[in-house]
Length: 282
Image (cartoon, rainbow, N blue to C red; front, side):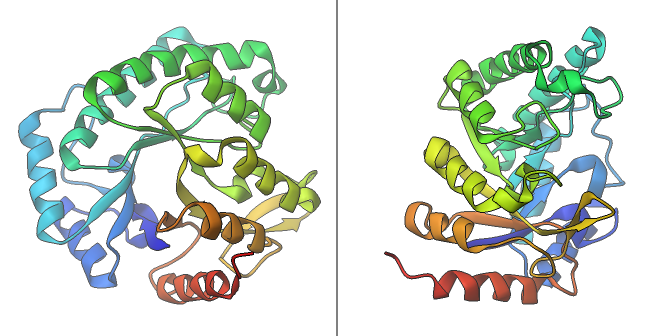
């Protein structure tokens, strides 16, 4: 596996070149970059894009040996307010243009909730919640196919694509080679289903393992009846099913650590690599 980290976990917000220096100094080569979560000296509002700006970013990334595995674009493609949904689609399509020049592997998003403020809403899990997502992603994927860029979609237990079966339905409905999956196995768990985690993770690989292109990895605990994220190795997550599937089916996949810190990054990576090495290919 190749290890990497989210930029906004790696260091505080700062100027773009200083950000790239921090990434290099930590010895990280692959990152997830969300412009507004990491960069202070450049505006990335919709409409600010130009090839000149994107080429400046590319030259700076290359200077410090930094590769963008995922260009993060945090939107709510399921927003029930049409004007806001359209604005998010436009924002994402602009990120596709950056990704094409940056050489990012994909532009990634979670799939949101059927609520204007992204709050928990039972309607998220209904057909009424699913259809806005499908409409948004069809517009986004049409642009991605024209630009030759990959869209990375991440399932989350509290979002529209809340289980492996819903992700499979979505992939079939979209039916595009430009859509792939960012798998965060912990994000498919909640306080109700976490004891079935092995079955859920194996099911995801069974249904759409061929479409999984990037991993997010962390741990979790149950506290006061709620699932909360934890540092790698400090919680209840069983890494064996995930790592076994990766070893058998996804050699050299990029694994981006979440809930890590600059102080923990290398030890977290070593811990995961050790578990990976201990798995026999049976």
